[in-house]
Length: 72
Image (cartoon, helix red, strand yellow):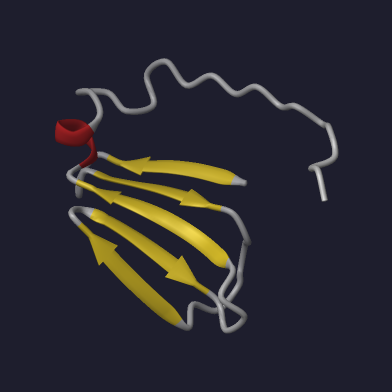
């Protein structure tokens, strides 16, 4: 997973599947969800990120990873 913020365009991008072709995009109130051909989420983009989150969207970035298997 890769998280990027472009201050010039005020765009935050969260990429789940790198270098995967985007087959379809859905925009919902300033969020763009990109899907691949199989319907899996490739990336989520946040438009006008600083006004939707905080003035410095990556300023206090903190990741927690929980490595438990999902219930089937």
